[in-house]
Image 1 (cartoon, rainbow, N blue to C red):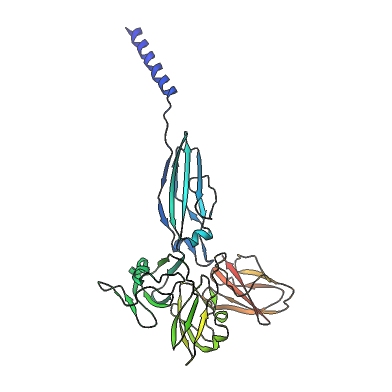
Image 2 (tube, rainbow, N blue to C red):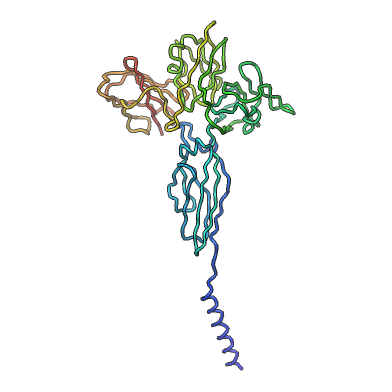
Amino acid sequence: MKNQAFFLFAVCSIAISTIGQNNPQKFDPVIILEPLDSLDCANYNFETWQWQPYQIEAEVQNADVIEWTTSGDGTFDNENIAAPIYYIGKNDHLNNAVTLTITATGNGLTETANIALGIPLQLIPITKDGWTGLSSFVEKSDVSVTEVMAPVVEHLTIMMNSEGSYYWPIPIPPINNIGNWSAVGYEAKFFDPPACLPVYGNPVADQSVFADGTFIYLPVLTNYPVAIEDLLGENAEKVLIIYDWKDSLTWTPSSPGFEYLNPGMAYNMILNVGESFTVQFPPYSWEDPQSIKVNTATEIEVFPNPSNGIFSVKLSDIFQSVEFEIFNMSGVPIKKGHAKQSSIINISTYPKGVYYLKISFNGTKLLKKVIVY
């Protein structure tokens, strides 16, 4: 009986083993991935005016081959791993979205999954309590102010235009005398920052603002900082004052307390009595939106850049001795002096961030972005 029992056990064991060898168990590839995501202020570098690399959060099981593709023009650091980094392309940004697709293959089986990634054309950070100027270069004239401001409504006390119409979200129901959003400036009061206002859509086609009457709320209808002096040109003398609500700075033709107008902001521009003119903003720059388009800066070499705040400036042979000024991102000058064809400038005592070096020579102005880390 013992031998017979052993024989039966051995036969069963062989049969089970054979079945397992002839019919290996197959596992489908598994992709764990959130299908929807959208970028916000945390994904954007407001010092360099560029999108941060987007880290894809994905997990893949039972796959021998992985491949990522994009519907747009961005790139992956490695399209053959489960969780690569994606670099946002220009058309991704302009289209307000991109679809990223992962294909996983294993055991002769293939699975795919997508991320639909929303990319706002403009992001407006709310960083301080109190009053600030607000504007957008995105066309939203068919959308109500209530809808545009919905992402930050919990931080908004009130906003108004230069005509005195206002949007007051606190009452129930809210009061919106402004109606639809326009490519004009607004004065807004926020509380409990930070907050982030994403704006989706296409850029406004008309980048001009007619300044008439005593004052206007001047929007910024381009996607990079604009030098006030170059924006106004010969009309600068028609302006009494430009006021920045957010930082309580003032600009006048004779005493410019700040130098640049920033996207997402609006400014209170007061004209001299009887004056009027059209403010024409420069064209959009989607290739290099962080650059200030005043003049080409190929005649200036800054190195190292980025730096710790101590850097060399080398000028082309057409310059001998020039005046220079350095401005922070708010347009406030922090240092000025004279530079020769080869000079060393030290701003290491100032905070880390982006600065602009302006060279003035015989009426020519050249600007160069300088990054301090």
